Image (cartoon, rainbow over all chains, first blue to last red):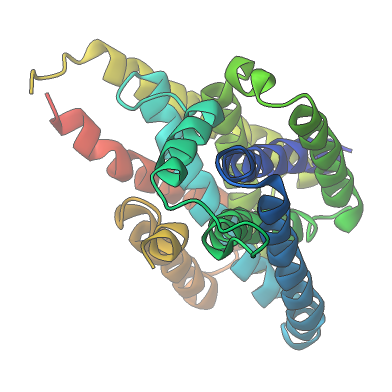
Length: 246
Length: 64
């Protein structure tokens, strides 16, 4: 039950935040250029990702033994999770600007407005490429996170359910346009996702390396608690240290 | 290309290098350690991961 809930919440948060970043780019392309081209770019990226998942997924699952798969997944989750956690610590300590998809939207829009306008009646390839690249890069992270969390003891169900919740939420935000982007505490959410992904990373790596976790799946809780305590300790230490004037 | 590099390596090489060292240390311990690894190996991995996180944040501490 512990692993199921943590997987569902972790997948929903991680996928939601990645999709928000993709949405910010697609909205920026749609408002600065033409919405139709932004959607074409995004759809193209989703189709490309789906093909890669359908072709590569079963091949990897069939060839790799379970222990090796756990090591690979644990390593991938640690790479993602620790990066999110490091940035989260720096943001909460005030050493890095807060994460803000609305700001990304404004910056992307400003960059696109500097480009030559599209010719009427012809495809706007620069806009499609920008939207497609944004969705592809964030989408790769979504696929890796869902696939990795789906290797847990409860299988793909909680990871896919969490991702589905995230998709619905992000589509809702997209329909309501960009206002909600400004209100989300993204820095805190990304910090939390960093804790969850890193905890699963340590757990799976241990499983793949023949470790018997005391307490079974409940080990996720004390691993997460340890990472949370250490990370908050780093935040407090950084907040207390004076920053040199540039 | 820069976006792809950032996606794969992140913003600092300390994390991918650190995680690679943790995995390598785990593989070695699994191969050579006795039964203690099965019981306590998880805590060793957790300690190593905490150390990697601390090392990746060290530049921020030095920037005083």
